[in-house]
Amino acid sequence: MDKDQALKLVKPHLIQTRYEHTERVMQTALTLAEIYQIDQEEAMLAAVFHDYAKYRPLEEMIQIIKDYQLPDDLLSFHHELWHGPVASILVETELNIGNQAIKEAIYWHTTGHGQMSPLEKIIYLADYIEPGRDFPGLDMIRKTAIENLDEACFMAVRQSMNYLLSHERLIYPETLNMYNQLKRKLEESNS
Image: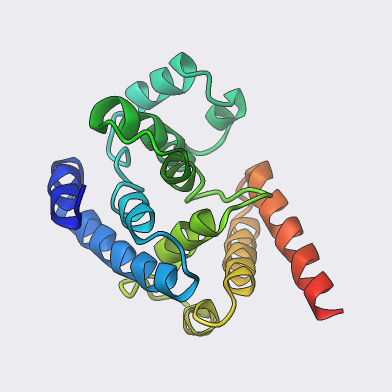
């Protein structure tokens, strides 16, 4: 599936501003994939479809989480975390995208997890740093993203966790695992 086909398939599922966000995530992911020598088609497809389920009704997402035996703990966290795992199912059932690497990158793009692949890191980061985003600290993460993928992901997950803590929100356990794993990896590489 080429870029134009993918964008045409995702567009009806997104509001206009989210579609524009998706285009920027795709461009950012393709840039990062080139830098880190990751498969361009996988990066493009994961980026285009990362928010495929974003606007599905909550009842539909709950049913998919139950029907496909996704982790039960998802339902005890904010519904904003559901669209990645649900989209990873829907891209296969509705669009015949069965590539496991693409599905995993879509699944984990919001929370991250402890053992992320380079593609998963690229989609997580592209979603975080795409040019339409604007908040303090982002320019430094963007600069780091083209130099050190792990360090940029660490900066992003740390900033996300700080935000959640400052608003007294729950933190998904795999997000903490991502933080810990990247912290260990960066400490080992700096020693």
